[in-house]
Length: 294
Length: 300
Ligand SMILES: Nc1ncnc2c1ncn2[C@@H]1O[C@H](COP(=O)(O)OP(=O)(O)O)[C@@H](O)[C@H]1O
Ligand SMILES: [Mg+2]
Image 1 (tube, each protein chain N blue to C red):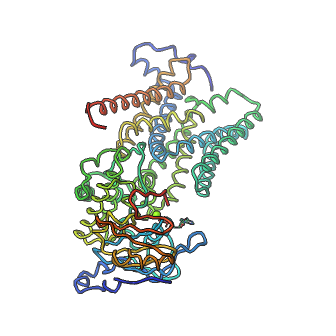
Image 2: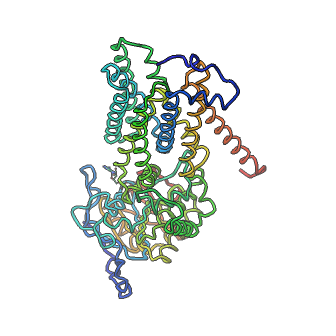
Image 3: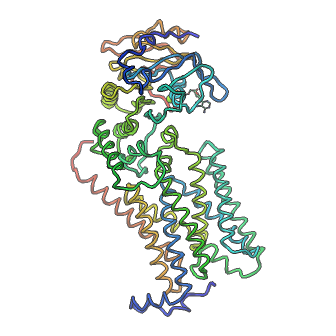
């Protein structure tokens, strides 16, 4: 119904992008897309696009359908009506080129598997057959795992059982797992959830760095925009079954959010640069306000 | 069949070589050791995945289902193996159906528990209908290594080889689906199919193991060695190897010890496995205590 496609026109393929035809210029394109779950339409008329090397946040209150959106990008849920294109193919067809970190995944102390093995599974966990040690390919893959652990700064504790690590350490390993196949698109569902503030900041800057260095498109679901605000290119805000896409300060404004919710919403600018959204049924932007699993 | 073994062997002589010669001089004892070895390898591998997947309750239910299977086979005058394999196979299909249709964990375990009760009741019924040699109930529940024929050994070998080959071929996707199902599914691993397939493999392993350890002591080989291995290492390949090694060790030692004793073999195998598990748990608890105590005045 009411969506403002601000910014989507700004990402037409440039000549530079066309020089490498293997990689699609836009990583994700949704056009007037809708998804139904259990007979209920979760959102409809959702249009947005994410370009290579772009860092886009998916925001919205609990139950707005953020995780549903990520699953639709992965092709785990159908998009109908409307159209969706992911890395130049229908959703689900290009999942080998996508790194995925699902929501709220932590491993309890009884999980007796090492972080490095979990990262390795991101690389070869879908391969059948007996893994024979000593083959050149195995050595190459071991090197790839070592590199990605270095990249996310998890090398020091990667050989410990993952269940014995802290939430922030687990999250770094899971990001390494999502990155290990050098994906073109990274889907992170609430990776900052259950982390303390310093860890939120360092994971956010890590994602920004990966996004720029590797030219990966990132779609990151967040409950709280403030830890990632300074790193973001654009946001997609889901609420009331609709979505608005645009630059962070355009979308997170009293006017735009009031239009999206169809109710008066006020966005306050704190003196430290933080945004605080007031007046919605839930207040997902306020620090310390945590909700149960969606 | 359920002869007290002390009637065969005249006690330990403290001469290991002559003891072993005595053991191997009987064909049935060689069969028993071969069968035990095959089953230990299979149980070690399957058990490692079962413990990782936290499906011990499903495994236990399958072993309870083995009991009416064997009882029904004796009632119908069929080989016990037929009963074990068909009931455990059907049980695995039922469990897969329960796992596929239920979404919540609590209703799943309740459904599995009801199945377990039904299986025990059926077993009891079949045994009461079978007025023949009632002392065979003992061996159905608690196992006997004796009376295993060369044909049975070959059947066990075929089942074990198939099971281990399937698990080795699926090792990485199964590991992925077991520890990280959501990501595995997104990466194209058929998690549902693997769940179903693993329950079938588990059913086959339980059926084979029951023939050696009896329905109730399956866990001595299927769970305890695997749980011990998981305590000892979090490396997958090493863990599977350790699990096999422990299952083999307790089978051989338990078997050998029981041959010179009036106590049944299941008792020795189970107690050895359990003792090892306790020692490893204690060792780990002690070492983690010394680790946390090591940095003495750390601020909370
Ligand atoms: N399997 C399902 N069947 C029916 N409804 C579902 C299912 N999964 C999620 N939902 C509903 O879809 C809505 C969006 O869920 P979700 O995408 O997880 O929200 P978010 O991630 O934004 O918190 C919620 O109202 C939720 O109740
Ligand atoms: Mg969610």
